[in-house]
Length: 290
Image 1 (cartoon, rainbow, N blue to C red):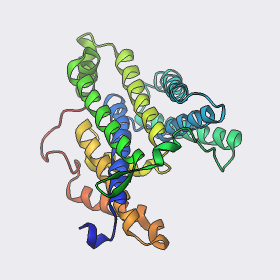
Image 2 (image 1 turned 135 degrees about the vertical axis):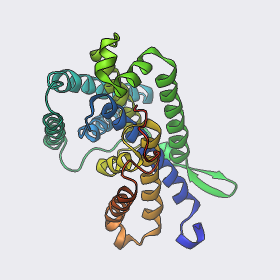
Image 3 (image 1 turned 60 degrees about the vertical axis):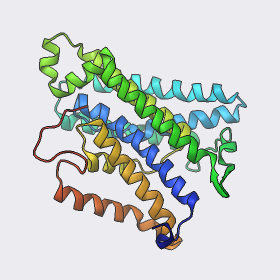
Image 4 (image 1 turned 135 degrees about the horizontal axis):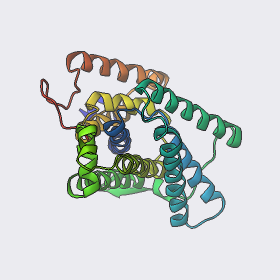
């Protein structure tokens, strides 16, 4: 298949890495949706903020570990503010109101970034050594591709452990299945929602460190493709979209690469017409959420 598509092993490794990044973003979006029934359209801007923090840490000649901690701190603070100033006050409103609110926050953060940093952005050089390739069996693969796959797999395993083996994780799953009943049984709504938002923010910070993604709506398509109600299908959908983007981006001629999002969204539409519940969920069965 690699020979047919005329792609090399580096392109395949980059596709796996992009799939891992999209999987992290997909499960981050799916966590908040599972608890709040809300698609957070400001999620891409949280990643943007983390990337800027990392870039400025590099410009200020901070040690790498300090820059990474600064990135995580910025994203987590913004996530906490988003929860406290937007999600919590509007929790009793209709889903449409909360959806519009996330759109407003996304546009606000994007406008602030354009005014403060300009449209050309800022370059982060602290992780530049990860772009140096490793020679593996005569095949050169960039370090960042391998690191991204390993980090994404580790984060997803840790998240699964959190959801299945901790009290907060079990509360998140219970609240996503039936929020009212969970509250009657003693689950604290504010704690569960804040926990989901902060865990989602942690995943956004990891993505910001690995790579700044410029097309977050493609990731949202991956979440819908896999299935919004469960983390594993959402993760698989995100990975599928990311992997397909990497493979097709390497296989398509340069002058046709701008049509890649069109191909991906067309595929998503076809899949959803055939499998409305998502590609990786069981049809005709109510799935466990989050």
